[in-house]
Image (tube, rainbow, N blue to C red; front, top):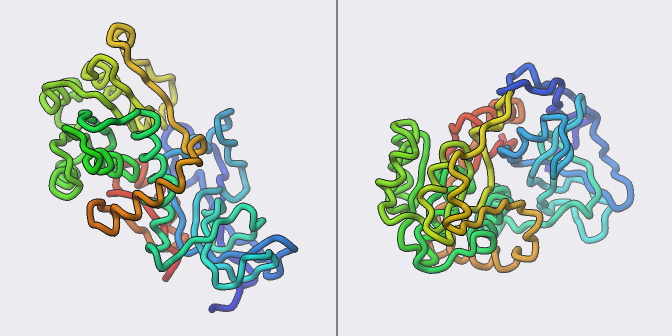
Length: 340
């Protein structure tokens, strides 16, 4: 085990972004490392951290379901690492843990906020993706929020991302009649159909979604999993069959808007078709965790499920990884690794 350094690096938000974040909104700073944590606390050397779309909302000074990042303070997010000092019962040096203090090389925290993970069951980075928050979001959003049932036709936007790529595969595994995905490049469209098993997919940059979706789903759709919002949501409302269900997970098309985005122009269809549109927050579905892990771990072992990652090396590249994720440069889960 490497010696504990006196200082480590951490990312601070130094300016609230106006529209798209830029490099000047962030600063990589040094901070002292507490090598002797107080009783009940642990010191973790982070090995992998997550960058996720929801983090963009936390950069705004606005009330939401999660508090905003504070200026000139280290940002937060999911991370997995190795305990290098412990004063907490049940947590030993060398244990690997999942915790919420990413965006830094070393994290000192109350052990109550850490969860031990087993590196022998899956790569540690998987606990930030397929076996972590994105995976549970996909699982809960499809099966509990959208009430998916065998034979449903499912449309997923942002389908090559961390959540969307899993939603489509979960639906196929559980007997969907048809799974349609949208993505932002022809390469990702090929990936969806040839690797992830989607029945068909389209590049939303090639033509309006409202033109491409009816061709991809001539018999309509029963479930829509929304990661994008905007024109995708409007097109899906039109395509949904009577009593269709939509899980509203994200609206990445609008995260960097500087003015309020217009709502779908066809909301009257929700009434006539008796549609159900419901948001999903993963924190509401913790009770699903045991079944989720059992199912998804089994699908991974059997080869039914593919979980891709895009890995960026080095804490110094974390903000660029975050911006790249917002631009759609990742396939599957975007991970920043500090293992070099």
